[in-house]
Image 1 (spheres, rainbow, N blue to C red):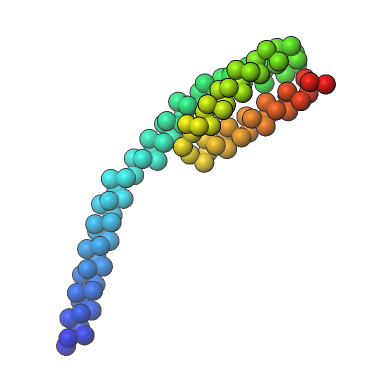
Image 2 (spheres, rainbow, N blue to C red; image 1 turned 135 degrees about the horizontal axis):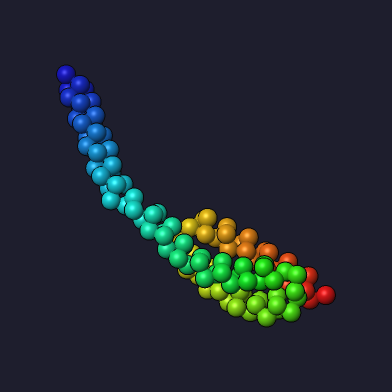
Length: 106
């Protein structure tokens, strides 16, 4: 009889713990959404500066002129980005910027 009581108390405690943890998870859920919104705002400037370089790909003088601002904006965004997706986007932009810089340095 004592074992059944301990089992029931254990089940009751486990259920309570799950309910409480579920409530806590709901409170923290907006954080990822806030991080995504923050990254979106942060990436706007970096993408704009990188796009200026990418769109100028046929004109190396324009690439060289836009390159310093793009590099600055990408580096600044790198310190502010909070999500893996944001980091991936920055890396892809940086790779393309570096390719264009290498192409125009020859």
